[in-house]
Image 1 (cartoon, rainbow, N blue to C red):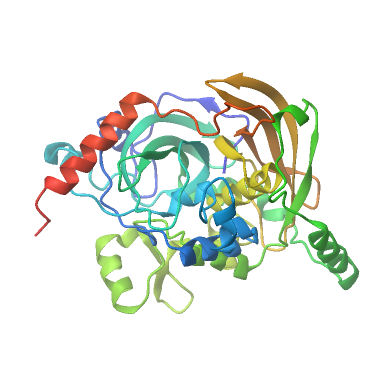
Image 2 (image 1 turned 180 degrees about the vertical axis):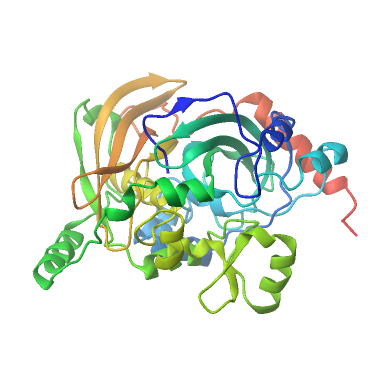
Length: 427
């Protein structure tokens, strides 16, 4: 969660696990600008028609471009495609260049016990994702900034870059993840959110929510031409929620597993507890369980300074993206999405997502539209926003939909892929 009213500070007190240590920050700075293959394996490594459909439905998107394998054959893409933001949860492990062993050992085990908030990020996309695609990535830490926030005491803001590419070496997208790490003790002590009352809904109110859902429509096969869009256009709205544990669980069903700190069961969980012990917290019965349950366990959420369980920031990134793809239609392509999470989305909260066209331009052979997308809860408070750029079709010929891939990124992706294919499998 992003915090307002922050100021930069220059000192860090050395302390026990669960606090931000000067020594940890210095070790982390050694990693800045160092890229290595992504060895982690996400829930999905290769895309199928079923995984695309499952992802879309799990985030509440019933667009046939994503859910019907036959529908896409008549579109410009020639097949079913995935919502572009699905790249976030697709990753096959790679062989090849690792972080140098000495550097890895120096930085191993830093930031233990800190509470991590996914506060948003920035995507740039270059190619669609289609059935049969297998995605790899290389990654590296880009920036680190220490701040003091009203909510969480000392916080550390980290940006990590992931370059995603397919089995042909084509760069699909680049993601810069914004993570905020806060000290657990100060989060619980200083949070001002504890007095927030949970939202409740009566039958009449829920009937109104359902009626609004039934009025939502995606643009579909009718092209939205660039020439027909004007700055200041209102883009309509969609809803998400009221938030339930089921909706949070469906985020995991969609494929979001927060590697390497994943929800796990039985023997797998036991092995994970040995590998990442700080990722487990005892429940009221004394059983170590994933710390991720702050997203469905009210008691644990309260222990870190929140009045109730809350969603993942990544899920709201999915929702903001859904709004954009509904608006642009089958022929559009989202070039970029920068989003930030401003407030928590607690159990029972309803999000209404709307947008406005803020710019219109022609660049690199594309007809582009800029827009500000906003999510507001039932109180009218802005909880998240996204600045997006969309490539739209034109009523004129000779217009590109897909952006050019930066040459340096494309060359690096091909080098990493060649190294993957020529490296010996790990023992």
